[in-house]
Structures are given as structure tokens and as C-alpha cells.
Length: 251
Image (cartoon, rainbow, N blue to C red; front, side):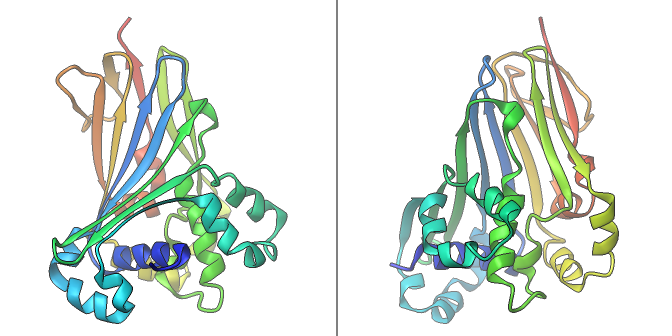
């Protein structure tokens, strides 16, 4: 079996090579607790080039994989490298310890599914996990800053959620200084080109019926407790505030 970090790096290699669908799922309970996950479906690449990728990655990649591990295990593998990071970066990575990763890869069945999830006690404290994963990717890509890995999830914004039983908000606050610096970033340009045909889907499940959503493109489930909004992945990367929305619930 491949080491944990090799598995995750291979997962993002899949993401950078073809169009993928990223789905941000959130299940919110009435008391504000719940579950958050990001799912990546890279089966399209396995359909097109699974055998070739297996040859590139070695015998392990050709085997059917159904592996579950935590970021705590992943961090333990990279503890020496992480110790060299700034205290702020180390603290950000440490917050990822309770996230669980499930990877299913089967070249024969042309399947590639990655799920990264965590339970949360308070939606108001939930962080943007793609940014934390980007910190790990940047650490690994330090010797080659132009790799697409270095920009994955790094959309120069801070993501905040609020829920008080009456309203729910998802709000990305853009760091304008970092966004300006990124204009001439060749790695960012490469990432944008690669992800141009990928989609980012928001799928949020609530304990109450939704009265209205600020985004007019939102689709409702039959019971109006789930909303789904789809964007090009480039919107997530270049204009993360486009994904902001507010939900008002029925009384």
C-alpha cells in the first residue's frame, strides 16, 4: 500500500490532469453541529487514462484501493517538514487533525473518488479546509513552486459560516493584497487553465425548510431542506465571493 501522503498527492495529481467535480457538502443540525465534507470525483480521468496513470505511479496504483485515514496520521508522516513551517502555518495544519480521508480508486472499474470530511460542534467555527490542504501542498511543492498543486484551494480568501436557527450564511472574505500579488503568479495561471472545465458544487442540508436563498440559481430538494448551487471551479479560485449566499428559513 502506498504511504498516506503519496496517496493524497496522487489524488491531487488526478485532479490537475482532467475535469473533476468538487462537491462541498454540509449537513447542519438544529443546534448548529453537523458534518462537512468535500468530495472529488476524478473518474473521468480513470476512464480515459487509468492504465497509463497506473504505469506512471507503479504497481500500487494499479491495485483497487479503498483506504480511510485521518489527517493526524498524514501530519505524523510529515512532522519533520511541518516543524520547519511558521507557527501560523503549523497551527492551520493542526486544525486539520480530525479530518477523515476516504479514497476509492479502481482502475478496472474506472473509479476515482476522494472524500475529506469532519464533524463540527459549531458551524460558526468551521474553517475552509481546502486552504489548509493548500498549506500542505505548498510545503511539498516548495522545491517546485510552479506545480499546480501549490495553488489548489488557495483562493486568497477566508471562508466564514454563520447559523442562528433563523438564517445561514456562507461568506468568503477576499484578501485583496494577496489577490493582487497573485495576478502575475504563473502557478495560479497554470491552475486556472487546468481547472477550467471542472465544477464546484455547493450542496447544503438543513434541519428546516428553506424560505429563500439569496442566490437565484439555487435548486431545492422536494422537502426544501437541501439546496444545490453549481459553479465553474474557476469561480471558486478566482472569484470566491461569487459563492457567497444567505439562507432564510421558514418559521
